[in-house]
Amino acid sequence: MLEKQAKIAYLSIGSNLGDRFKNIEKAKIMLSEKNIEIIQSSSYYETLSWPDISKPKFYNIVLKIKTKFNVISLLFICKKIEKLLGRKANFKNSPRECDIDIIDYNNQLSVKGINLPHPRMHERNFVLIPLFEINKYWKHPISKHPIKSLIFALSDKDISSIKQI
Image (cartoon, rainbow, N blue to C red; front, side, top):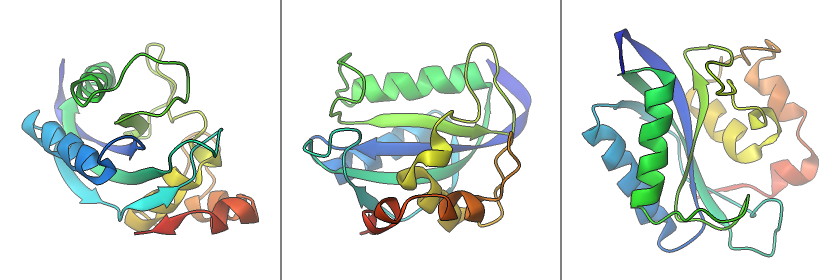
């Protein structure tokens, strides 16, 4: 379903199976093919798999997008892209070719059963650091904490274990 006015949203895309870089690039192309405008893309970051660090490492990026899709339609598109890229319905946090999360949708709070902003984004180095790269002034829509303070709240291990590639 389309909205009258375009909305700004942030998506986190990760991959830890197959050609991680290619999987994310394909996801970006598929989003663009759905008339979702990618305004900005962070650098690629490599992180340990969570919660099981013995699993393959992730590549992660954050995108700033402009979309006329409502949040439910955007979520549907993201889930469809994940499946097209090979994601299976496995157990939670299992390795995957593609994972796309809506981090923030127009600073809105939960909408029709979709938790906004993403409920654990403020604890995740692979979301916060790439998001900071593309929007140093972003504030958490619920806590109103600036992104810098969210990053400072991460553990030293979380800060040191992420690397830009």
